[in-house]
Length: 301
Image (cartoon, rainbow, N blue to C red; front, side):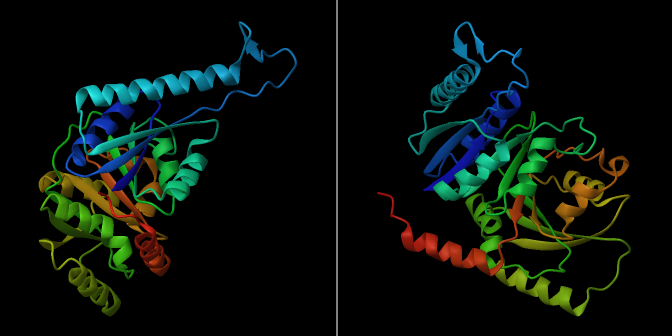
């Protein structure tokens, strides 16, 4: 039973991510947790209203949040009516990223799926500020970011971007391998280089280990020259090979970190045209956590 958390603000952008999730996991038993957070403006003076028509503002916002979540579940059940899927709703007076971290811990969430706005913010041009904050804050669970208006395509071509400078554990690669096996997908390991040169001894070792981990999945290695920026290079690679899903590990000095730090001029072209799977750095701690989770899991009937 997969446990999947989907934050929603009831926008069409959020609904598009929900539709993608329902189709992606249509053949898997899942519990979906739909989260809506609200943070009322705290009155800064005695002249600011604490109540409207006799109702406390916080109560009104909570009621609106709960109604929105109920309508979302009803809309899903009407459109999909999938017996594999169960739904839970969470309405919370909290900051979005803080609530997500708490829910991931409390419910042992396997995946967070969020819609991306490709917004116009100065800092977060390429994905939208909420998505970037979630990726930077949530360290115990993979994040799947779905671009606005992206229609579902079964991910049979998956790109995994890496520089081979880091050793990967089986627990970190598990979401990637699981996705590939679920759709009999081909994994395209893509290495972006600034000037093509031979791999170092460490990089070659890490590549060999990676290929060993992926032995049960069809995979190929692609080395490409950097074009202006990492983000633009990956976007062009994805278009040319008709990639349906781009996956990256998020750790210090990774491609993911580089992309969130690239100058605005270099990454305005990258608007996450395809879904992006961001896998957190788990290391050996992740392996032990995964083992504990298996020990405490109850077989589904």
